[in-house]
Image (cartoon, rainbow, N blue to C red; front, side, top):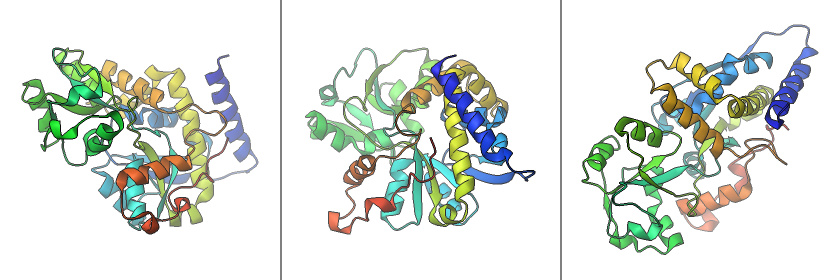
Length: 326
C-alpha cells in the first residue's frame, strides 16, 4: 500500500472511530462558499463529497459557487455560510481592516502564479520583462505585486509597460500580440489557454522567483469558530483526506467535479488543473495539511504594506491552527 493510501485509510478510520461512539446522530449541515465559479482547484472537495468522506464524519456539505472574494466575505459575516474558500491574501487584507474572521487552513502557502509569454518572445528570466507590455487587471495576483517581484529579482519596473485592462479582455489582446505578457494560475487559466490555442506557451514561475502570496485558504468567522468548533474540525479533517485521495486518484476527482460541472472544460484540461492544484498543496508532514505558518502571514502583511507596523494587528488575530487535526 502506498504512503498516500495509508494516510487516507488511517484518516478514514480515525474519523469513523471519532463518531462511532454516538448511537445516532443527524448529519450537521455545513455551508461552504467559494469565491469563484467552479474550477479544477475545487476538485478535491467534490471527490471527498462523492466518496462519502464528509458524510462519514457526520456532515452534510453544501458547496456553492461564488461571484467574488468580497461577496464571499460578506456571506460569511452575515452568517449565510459557515466557511469560505478564497485566496488567503484577501482574507489577510480583510482582517487587517477589522473584519472578525480567521484563516483556519492555508492549502496554498504560495499562490501558483506564472507569467505567460509567446514562444517566439519568451521570458526566460524576470529581467526579460524589461521592454515588454504586460496586462495588469485590477486585483490580479500575478501583477498586483509586480513591483515586489521586480525588486526581488533586480528588474527595473519602470521599463515594463503595464496595461490596465479588463481581466476577460487580456487573453484576446495577448493572443493577437497587442500584449506581450499575461499572468495566469497554473491551476486554472494556463491549462484552459493552452487547450484553446493548441500552443505551449513560455511560462515563468513567479513562485520560483520569490513571489510568495498566500493562495487557497479556508476562512471562518470568529463567531463560527467560537460556536461550531467541532463541526469545523470535522470538515477540515475530512478535507485533508479528500486532498490525499485526489493525489492518488486525480481522474476520479475529475469525474466528481464534472458531475456537478457538465459544461466545464474538457476532462483533460480539468485533469491538468487538478494535478497542478495537488502539486501546489504541501503534503502532510510534521503538521497537518493546511497548517498556517506565522511567517506566511507576516510576509503577506509586508506585501500589503497596510499602515505602519505599529498599526498592524497581532499575528494571532489572522489565523488559528486549533481546528486542524493530525
